[in-house]
Image: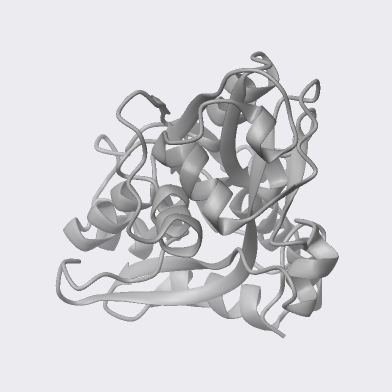
Length: 267
């Protein structure tokens, strides 16, 4: 029976337009979730652990598509909860609530064959803005191919705010739809530079930023300057099965251990 319950924790790419309305799903003990590709790898083990320990009878349907998708889906009632790795914006739909669940680090990455060791904010702006076209200027070698996230991305929003400021990404950048695709593009191209959530740094070179390594330890201590919040987003305050799940994430020791395995707990 336990294995059957765990089959309710599903992962898919895209929005959840075919799912039942959030209110109807909530009344049946089903929590539907969509949004950030950064939050997605954390949400899956949290949902599995919740079903095992507290939420027997609760089913989860989880999909990814970017933070803006999660915000829009939650606001429209297409899902119970959205996942967002960006802060609230003035232009977000009215009546939605952002509830923090963790913090994360955003890392600048290059190909493992091009081991850039440290990068300043000015150098990041030069690389991603297109004015630095050779890695020799930042301690590497060869030409530069920039990889960025698409507009709905919370990682793009955080990177713009934390690293680029008023600098806009070069128009020649390759645009991809997820952290995993950035990781893949950089891993396969010695000329590539990109940025990802800390959970997506396997197989690539991770550059220190302003002299501080992009590590979980430095993110936890507050030393690393490139950290951002993870949220669940709801239409109004979370309620029903979604509220029980959110409270468990914030209060349960097992949930906090899962978060601490690759992210920064809030307590």
